[in-house]
Image 1 (cartoon, one colour):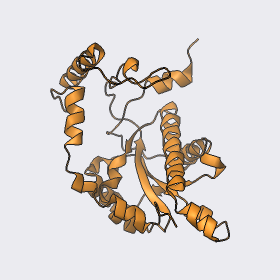
Image 2 (image 1 turned 90 degrees about the vertical axis):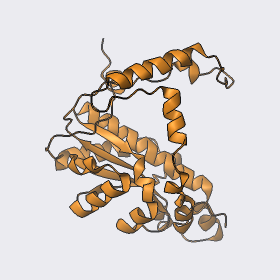
Image 3 (image 1 turned 45 degrees about the vertical axis):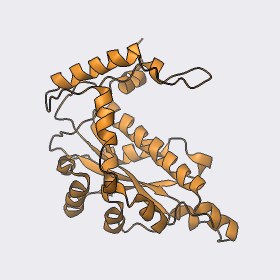
Image 4 (image 1 turned 120 degrees about the vertical axis):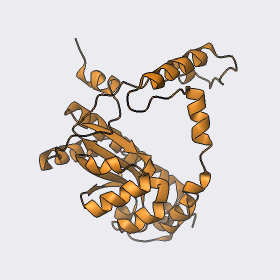
Length: 250
């Protein structure tokens, strides 16, 4: 018997080209509902979602991320870490203020937003939709905070461009489980790892055959390229987090 949930999960691929069809109000409501029914840390539901429909704000997001194709998606969601809502529910005391501004609560809100966005991705794929999670919204966190008038104790985490797919890209191969799934203890990567050598070739073959932007790149080279990016692009993240009231021990 085919398990449709597993089939959806194992068939995932990111979609960046969409038809002109917009998501309906009913589809948006269903997707948000799916996100809301994920587990949340201590049931505190420490995240929020903004639907972005203003063309000017979508264009600004295109500038920030460097990916203007998001403006042509069926809908764009912005996921936030959110302790502000809960701060409005409780009486301010030294203990509650210290907890709300703590690293622990910031991480909890990141976890909640992360689980929720993945649920929305899977829900969307089960509905015939495609999407791409966009961490590139963090390329200019201060601008994003101003653009969406984010209050203290909120912070942008991901964008999610979703819509009706206009492409069917090949699934991107994942690393072998033996390189990331261990028993009882962490297993460092061996310098002469045969599984890694094999996987590097698999990824090289994948990129060479990819239709949109064929390249010759192994997984090892890909990681090295990512780590060589100019860190100044997101150098203000810590300042932005502190400006929003996070990572403060009071």
